[in-house]
Image (cartoon, rainbow, N blue to C red; front, side):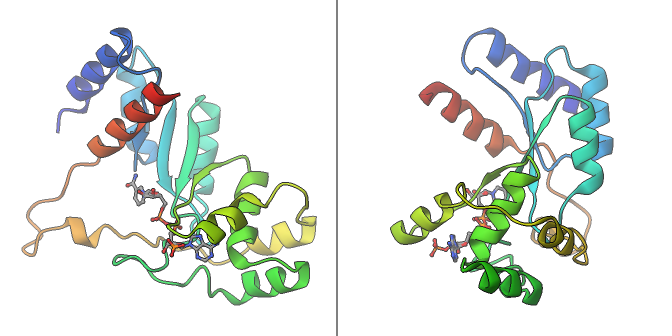
Amino acid sequence: MDFGSVWAATEDCQRLGLTKSIGVSNFSCKKLADILTLAKILPAVNQVEFNPLWNQKKLREYCKANGVLLIGYSPLGASGTLWASSRVVENEVLKEIAEAKGKIVAQICLKWAFEEGVGVIVKSFNVERMKQNLEILDWSLSEEECKRIGDLPQSRGCTGESFVSENRQSRSFGMGKFDYIFILKNSLES
Ligand SMILES: NC(=O)c1ccc[n+]([C@@H]2O[C@H](COP(=O)([O-])OP(=O)(O)OC[C@H]3O[C@@H](n4cnc5c(N)ncnc54)[C@H](OP(=O)(O)O)[C@@H]3O)[C@@H](O)[C@H]2O)c1
């Protein structure tokens, strides 16, 4: 995949006024570094998996140092989807913190992300849960609670196995073309 050409064409979209902002998705520090050396317009965001069990510490620091906002997808671990599990919403530490605060685990995850300065995109088709997911502003997590969450063992939820062919000869490309469309659409609507 020729990332340089794709990024240059994406920059043209912004120059032509087709979008206000452009970004990348699922970019590691290495891939981001490659784009940053070529880019005339920096990616506004890097959208990656982010939740208490995959907190992207290194990538977050790299993004921050380079002026790229890290946006977290699957902040609840994408429970209920085909590719993920309920390991985040069923995590015992998160459950304990939620119970002590009179909140639900989803709110603990979203509040923690908010306090970490990460923008999250959480998905729900349920109106009640959408409301719950917004009710994170008028209370706080203590330092100790944040530390407990920060100390949770880390592992990636989305391993990308489904993007690898059976004979493991080919991989899908890492520049999320659908995410560009996503960003473009939101930019035009705002
Ligand atoms: N860039 C990428 O490569 C990439 C990859 C994956 C996902 N994404 C995007 O990221 C967004 C969110 O990620 P995601 O859907 O993977 O994961 P997610 O937001 O962590 O989890 C969604 C799941 O959580 C449930 N849920 C939502 N609010 C809840 C609550 N308050 N309590 C209990 N369960 C709750 C939803 O069920 P209900 O609908 O029944 O509430 C749904 O099953 C999506 O828009 C997706 O398109 C991007």
